[in-house]
Amino acid sequence: MQYTGRVCVRRRMIYYFSGTGNSRYVAEKLAEYTKDTAFFIPQVFERMQADISVTEGETVGVVFPVYAWAPPSVVMEFLSHVHVDKKAFAFAVCTCGDEAGKAMDDLHRLFPFTSAYSLTMPNNYIPMFNTDEPELEREKINVAVQRLPKIAAEIAAHRAVFDVHEGPEASFKTVVVNPLFSMFAMRTSKFSVDDTCIGCGECEKNCAFHVIKLAGRKPVWQEGKCAMCMSCIMRCPKRAIQYGNGTKNRGRYVFPVQQKARQVVRPDAEKSVQSAQSGTIEFINSAEIKTLANPGVTVRRLLSPDNSESRRVSVTEIHVKPNALQGRHVHASSEQILYALKGSATLLLSGDAEKPFAAGDVVRFADNTVHGLVNRGSDEFVYISVTCPPVK
Ligand SMILES: Cc1cc2nc3c(=O)[nH]c(=O)nc-3n(C[C@H](O)[C@H](O)[C@H](O)COP(=O)(O)O)c2cc1C
Ligand code: SF4
Ligand code: SF4
Image 1 (spheres, rainbow, N blue to C red):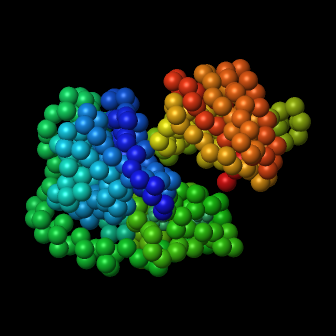
Image 2: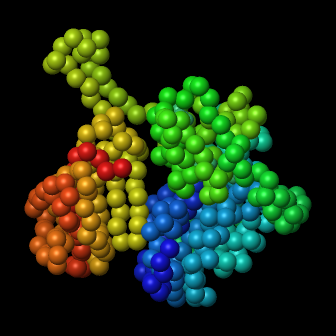
Image 3: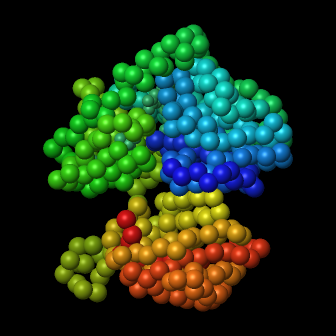
């Protein structure tokens, strides 16, 4: 990673990590209540050019799942690049199946929060335990959902709160057991895939650390970077992934909003095989639209291979904050059409060429054409981008 200095966080931000969606839900809900923006740590980390400074008067939060009574190492590594001023307000929220141990003590060494909470959510660690019974999963989620408005209000008021369920023998678990867990229970060699695998590539797509590569349409796990987040094993539509010997007969869990089945409406489905006039309608519910947030730029993937069966086209809505830049780049084998919806920006073209681009304008870039965009105005710029075929 290249570091070019430090950047100042100008807004209130929540950074989160999540494998199966509990912490993501919490982060996004808190962001909604507190009018902050939630950023997925692996994505921010991958594109980070400089350390982040949180200065006086600013607010920063971190939301993460507890792994073996400690924060996941990706969270700790990321926070070692976040510098929080004593006069800034920092808060932390962890989600855990049962108890957090001294995870917050570990975190505080790097991230001097004023306020910390734990939320008990459905358990996702199936290499050792089964998932919770459906009734318990529902109950845990209901309790967490009900606690969030109060937590958000306390955060907004900058109240100093420590509401963390550490459980018994917390220090022993965090200080002694956690390092052993990291040494012996984080092996990608224990992942395997069985014959029910259909080569759909969901596991590769859902690994935020690019640990999985499909070889001969079957996943292969590289050793080293796996966070043991359970995303691949939980999201395989065929339950074809196992970890060790114990997971075959155990349940699978993903936070409900994200596992909601896509609603595919097939009018007159039987006849559509015969009649060229019948067709297939895909209705994409707003809850199925993924939002990717980077500093200054928020991308809503309206229609993409994530939520659509189409492999020919993707449509995204992009919000560009003042002074944010999308640098010059090309798409080798995709064309892209942009439609400016709101505000104005400047297109960055080949060489040093530039062109104004304002609400109502349309521009098309053929394959291999240099383009980029910068918002030099004082208001947000919003545009729609149509890409054919979708860029991987
Ligand atoms: C590797 C690993 C270790 C875990 N260790 C703990 C733990 O020590 N205590 C606990 O209560 N839950 C533990 N869990 C459960 C998760 O913390 C819990 O299900 C969390 O809400 C998952 O969040 P996510 O859906 O955002 O990934 C563990 C899960 C994993 C994958
Ligand atoms: S998600 Fe499951 S079915 Fe799809 S490629 Fe991976 S292992 Fe195979
Ligand atoms: S390989 Fe699976 S468990 Fe490991 S980081 Fe990727 S998605 Fe998570």
